[in-house]
Image 1 (cartoon, helix red, strand yellow):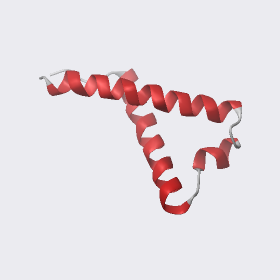
Image 2 (cartoon, rainbow, N blue to C red):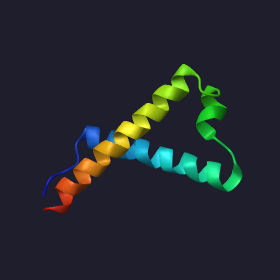
Image 3 (cartoon, one colour):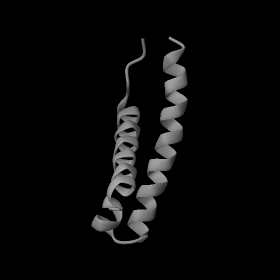
Length: 68
């Protein structure tokens, strides 16, 4: 069985953070990323991009891991 490497853990963490942020947006109309980093600042955009790329990465490794 493959163990998760550091990249896998970073991607999983970012996906969890993104999921929690969307949960807050849906439940309370509260965007934690925008509250911390400002509305659509360069840092916020980078975080959103990293979360999206991480979601693609996690989807790819989950298919690989499910075959084992």
